[in-house]
Structure formats: C-alpha cells, structure tokens
Length: 507
Image 1: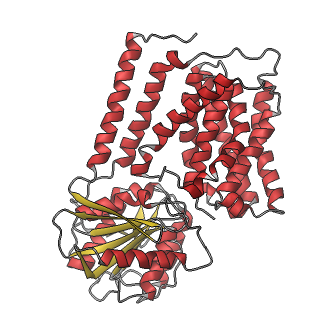
Image 2: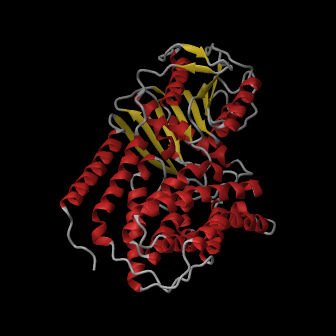
C-alpha cells in the first residue's frame, strides 16, 4: 500500500515547490505589464498585437517566427519592441502553432500570411501606417526579406535573425540588419553571404540602404531568440531607421566584419525561460515530495533477462532504427508522414527504436486496469508541468482538432520505447535512473544524428536535439515516482506524442 503520510522534510519540499510554481506564474504574467494586448483570427490565422498603453501614431513591426516555431517563441522581441514604443504584430504561419491550414512549401503561403498581418497591423488605431518594419527568424527571415523586396514602399527596415535566403541587392530590402548565433555555423555563413550580396556594411540608414551584421556570442538557433543582445540590436536598428538615433552603445567591429552594438539601456533581459525552468523545477520537487503517496510498485516479473541484454538493446536500437528508417525512406515520403512535416518520421524512428529495444530481453506482461489509470495520472502531471506555462513562453500547447487527430498515432508509436524504459527502471535507485537517463539521452541523440545523416530531408530534427535530455529527464523523474512499467509507458507515450504533435508543422 502507498504511504499516506508525508514527513516534515517532504512537507517543506512540497511548500517550496508550490512557492516556486506560484513565483514563476507571477513573473511570466508580469512581462505584459503596461501593454495593450489584442488577439485576432483572420482566415483561421491567429494573430497577436502588442503596444504600450496610451501609445499614439507609433511605428509598427511585423514579427515572424521560423520553421516549427510560433508566435510564442517570438514573445521576447514582441515585448521588448512594444515596451520601447512600437506596435508589434505576431502570428502563426500556415501549419504552425494554432493555424490549422497545412503549410504549402511550394506556394505563396508565407507571403499571404505576411500580407494579412500587415493589413491588420496598419488598421490598429495606435499605428502610423507610413512607418512599418519587419523582423523574422529562420524561415520567417526569408519571408520578411522577400516581402520587403517585393513591397519596398510598405517597409522601411528589416531585421533577419538566423537568416535563410532571399534575392537581396545593394538597394533591396531597405535597411537590412542580419543576425546569427556563434554556434549556428550554417546561418552565420548565410548571413555573411547575404551581407556581401546586399553591398556590405553601410552605416547610413537615411537613404534606406543601411546594412549590418551582428554575430551573437554563445547562441545557437533557438537560444538566440532569448538573447538580450539580439533584442537590443534589433531595437537599435529600428530606432536608427525611424528616429535617426542610436539608443545603444558604440558600434565596434568583431574582427570579421560583424558589427556589435552595445545593449540598449531600455531593454530588459527576457527571463521567460528562466521562470519556465523554475516552474518545471517546482513540479519536479512537488512530485518528489508526494512520491510516497504515488509509489506502489508492482514487483518485477521474475525470470526476465536483465543488465547486459537491456544495455545491449539500448546500445544497438538507435542505430538500427536509423538504418531501417533510411530503408523505409526509399519507399515512403518520410518528410510528410502522418500529416506532419518531419514529425511523423520522428515518431516512426521512436517506434522502431522502442521495438528493437523491447525485444532485447524484455518479457512484459499485460497491463492491469489500475496501471492504465496511473498512466493517465502521469500524463496529466507531465501535461501540466511542461505545457501549461509553455503556452505563454515558447510553445503553443493547446492542440486544435487537426493536430488532435494525429496525436493518438504518435502516442502509439512512442509506446514500445516507453514500456522498455519503464521496465528497465522498475524499482531502480535514483542513481540508477540517472544513469539510464544519461544513457538514453546520449544514445537517442546519436541515433537521431545517424538518422539525419542517412536521411538528410529530416535535418530539422538536429535543431530539436538539445531539448530531448530535458524532456526525457522530466519523464524519468515523474515516471519514476509512480514506478509502474505500463503506467510509465502510457503516460510518457501520451506526453511525448503530444510534444511531437505540438511542435512540428502540419503537412
């Protein structure tokens, strides 16, 4: 029977957890203080407008996210620019976030979305429609550069973060500022090429031909979105465009032709992910504190193979899954499998990985009804801990009908992996769970790198790899508190399937 009482130490741990969760929510909500926020839906495309209270006749900025991103990922730029005196419009491109339309990568969907956001932005009463600029990340950078090239009379400046491609010239788009993170070499190369084709560094923005490039230290494709230096440089560029002034520090050179602007005193660091991390920590502490009320482990089934076979299966499964995925790619279109761009192929890889690992010595019994109920409880805990605040910080967590239809299939694909992981960790000590988490994280990352090498069309998965140890750690701690293999499998499969469904664009 589970322990129905908590020690004094666990009670204090529970109180600490609740205080951390409350603090995180208060701080995240405080980020919009002093702003007017409006939400819209235009032809099923969700949009969000942000502007300072009592603002009048201010310049407007369109802020576009990248592939597999959403307006939530761009909130940092949105709040910085809005608090500095700009009106900002964010949105979800087709196939992304809460936008239910599949992304047509061969058509003009991105430009259509930008045009709709522009029309709505200039219709806002606070906006001076003669002063409009754009900012975009990755895929969104290509969209905003192209929009400004095709409609130069509508836009006065462009900031392209982690830029992809566009037909830039020495005169178009107007006032182009490029940024790339130090740890995203391909995008740094893209930015330098764009700068060269755009005519090189030009400091005078009065004639619309300003050009600059910022190399953001210690940043890669995702962390650059939360960089104070990136936010500050974008604000400075728009200030120089619209007000002919530089609110930042002096401009220097990094030795490779990249301009470095000192941070603006008006830019506050974007702490959303810090508070999100504390929110996750609070939930981990909460589950740890109440684990005596949850844990009622079923004794391991006698006679099953252990140790060496489990480790050998885990060692081989990621690479065999990568090879099988590549072979299936000769017969199937992996990039759009399951109605998700790349996400369906990722689910297939986890299905292959889990099946291979499961057959390497495991002899699971059929689940009992109570275990399935515990699995649903585990899913609920993971769903709230990971996703409730993600909706306000970086990930659109609520799934629309189009995505919900795809979720069960991805959850089923993750079930064999979840069952193998639950069986191998059943009754394990905290240190043993740590070793299994580290081993799984490392081998899953290596297996996915191998899958990308064999199937280059899945290359976007590379950008998601840093998140996998965090998600797996959360699954390990919360699943370990319940410590029932089938509950571990069901709860984690439902949760991980939800994550894949939420992140990847609709095909």
